[in-house]
Image (cartoon, rainbow over all chains, first blue to last red):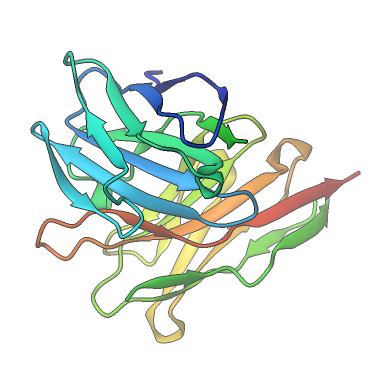
Length: 115
Length: 116
């Protein structure tokens, strides 16, 4: 069964450093998403991406965040200057069609720890 | 704004017993509702979804859920749980309104423990 692949599974970074979280969505999917889950809290929507541009973003997705689909297969989330409160599990998801009635396929997540 | 409430943080069930996980939502329009499961170290796997039509929906792994508009609920059920069902379960509602937004709003999750 096709999977959404996320790398790395764990990343530790120092506060103020830039991090790039990588995702390989399912090959024929067109809609891409990032979510995060702070430990003990709910999964939160960050951003959706379609046709090489952001289609929606949440209040969490401020100027320190950016997304990119650099080569037609990868989908990345960049955090420019990490803060302690960015420590969380970050999930990538993709969908072949608008997922509002179909759901997404999620990756296994990247656990980011900012120290 | 939409919200999802899962009132039970932890539930412990004996193997072979029945299960019901509660989910209540708040959303002004017709909701699109989902249940996801997360096993340790794994991503979120879609169990089932409600879009329209029959209010009792069947999912994978023997799960079902019933949409009750009058109670704003979408409870997940399974008649007989297996030890492999131990996981975190998330209820979610789609924010899609036809205007382009299609993110999911999740509940905080219910941690299911299966005892022998």
